[in-house]
Length: 304
Image (cartoon, rainbow, N blue to C red):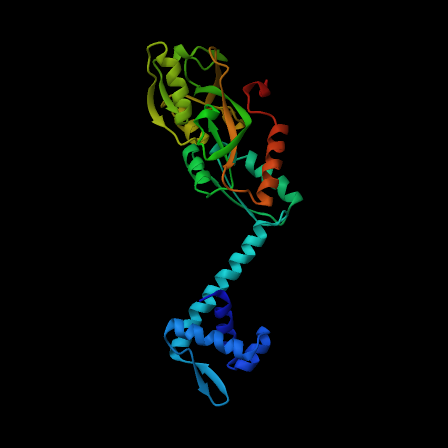
């Protein structure tokens, strides 16, 4: 059974006449009859019966037609989707990023990109670092923006380039004894409870504390959501170390630098190595790299 046989069958069912169907399909009537005979033989049921000078579907043919219409429709949609995907100025791009990038950077980048290529569509979601890497590896996303300590820890199935650095800063409640400072030593925080922003930052800070024989006290691990962390810190449940962003400018917390560390996390743009990106995804990849490089990096110094 093949796509052509199904198309023949559907046309015959609609016209109820082999001659008319053959003309519509631009094939000879004997060729059409032979194709239907093979289909009936394969299905082992009669699909048509004579009705005067015409033909009509048997109850088997009527049942099979419903599935044929569905199958042909799905195939047609698939063909169109593939055509759209490989048109440079059309198609759909699937992208995922960290939560911190999904509130401002990605919307602004997509908005500017669509001004140039209005026919391209996007599928977008915000995920954790691990889920972004898994999605890229499994082909769920065309592109992903994620953070990592260094390139050596990125999955070998993923091609990536560093596109951005974000300064890590300390946030504490406004009523904290240290809130009037602009810079403190991390060791001054050895007795504090930590609300960790991500496993990556937790690992980085834990390594520092362990070098002094100390272990940071963790009360909560967040899923890389700045607003959640700000809420817990504002409520006095602990302090945190997070990437600097405009969302930290609130009345409920203070933002400080760590004396020992000019500490940054690197944002990578990644895609699956073994899969060629569609033309539209390549366009957006190049556009996004240029867009990020021309925007200011997230640093507390930008506000001074």
